Amino acid sequence: MIELNAIEQGKSIVVVGGGVAGMEAAIIAAQRGHKVVLLERSNDLGGQALLAAQPPHKEEINSLINYLVTQMKKQGVLVKFGIEVNRSVLEKLKPDEIIMATGAVPLSLDVPGLSPKRAILAWDVLKGLATIGEKVLIIGGGQVGCETAEYLLQQGKRVTILEMEDKIAREMSSINRQLLSQRLTNLGVDILTLAKLVEVDQDKVIVDQLGVKLTFSGFESIIIAIGAQSYNPVGNDVGNIQVHVIGDCRKPARLMDAIHDGFYVGSNI
Ligand SMILES: Cc1cc2nc3c(=O)[nH]c(=O)nc-3n(C[C@H](O)[C@H](O)[C@H](O)COP(=O)(O)OP(=O)(O)OC[C@H]3O[C@@H](n4cnc5c(N)ncnc54)[C@H](O)[C@@H]3O)c2cc1C
Image (cartoon, rainbow, N blue to C red; front, side, top):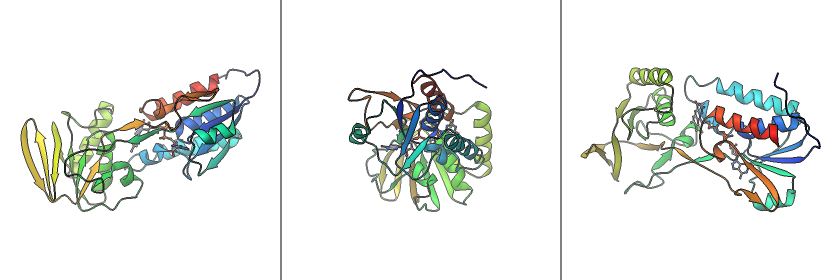
């Protein structure tokens, strides 16, 4: 068992965001004797990890979430749901220190003819918030785009992935990328690499592949999976209170990076 740094005096800590980074920070800070309150705007703990667990073969991420939720209870972290934290909420609470773990938001795509209504975010697909047609175009062949493709292919949809780079799912380890590619191929995906969406004209989508314009039609849904950017609604300081920024809120990365950030701040606060 890891020995945690002892504290001289317990502090009141507010953690904003109940993803894996916020939960890990809250657990470790509470274990060391601080009084910790975690504020989450939704009614669930887990954040993006809840989405990450949706595609096929990813269920084990739910065990990670359940483990962290159980540890929070054990360490006496007080969780308050349904609170959209902003600067004034924190100024009223006046904790000794604040941990911002508000994660990231998905990037949207600005392409001529593609209305915001037509462009569905992959995150909304995995949240079950979107109605998806039978023939689907996914813009972005990173891990999220590819796993969303597998999720939809398993529902019987016909899926094409458009990727700007020369290969899909570049951020995955080579073994996991190969396994995912093989499963997508078996499910009948179409993949266009080195290809960029340049325009949507009613039923037609126009794609630039190495300088050649290609036109496709018949896609009922266009799904955007082009990455995420950090989201921090209060910035790096709230009056004189020290603010620690962790996880995807600091820099979008991966589950273990977020947990590492949470552990580090929880251990040193
Ligand atoms: C579809 C998908 C698949 C992924 N697959 C993998 C994978 O296989 N492996 C991997 O390592 N990583 C994966 N990732 C990335 C990983 O899930 C994230 O890096 C990690 O979960 C980030 O955790 P976090 O706690 O920093 O942020 P988040 O999980 O985004 O948590 C932020 C929390 O803050 C809350 N919040 C936001 N604003 C406020 C506010 N103003 N007030 C109160 N609460 C607020 C949110 O509701 C949320 O609960 C995936 C991500 C996605 C989207």
